[in-house]
Length: 128
Image (cartoon, rainbow, N blue to C red; front, side, top):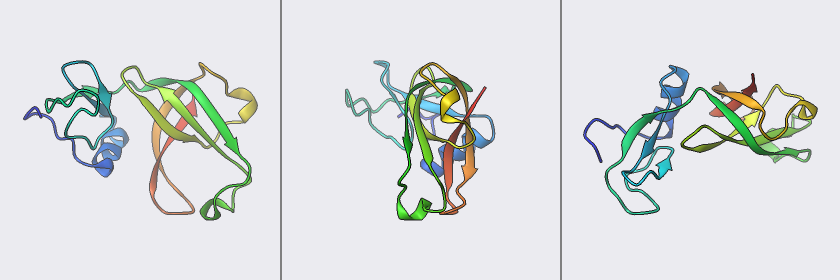
């Protein structure tokens, strides 16, 4: 791994997003990964460079869950999406968007929020 890259852990990556310094890791062959990662899963390269993450992505797909897991039972529904942020695709929750206004290609911004049910930080998307 390049000396200037701190792949850290998931919490470090969430911290970076919260401070508007989001990034992903990329090997010399162009394979991109979200931390933590020490080796490229595709080609095995141990050289991973930190690449700035775009602040805007586009919805690739989403699903609306009406029978949530027990820890989300206080919610009527949960909408989870995959968005393309250039080099990487990221999965997150669409928390404040009506499903009717979300479709493939919808522009979203990446954010980190505290989950009310688990008190964990989670990746969320907000339509632009």
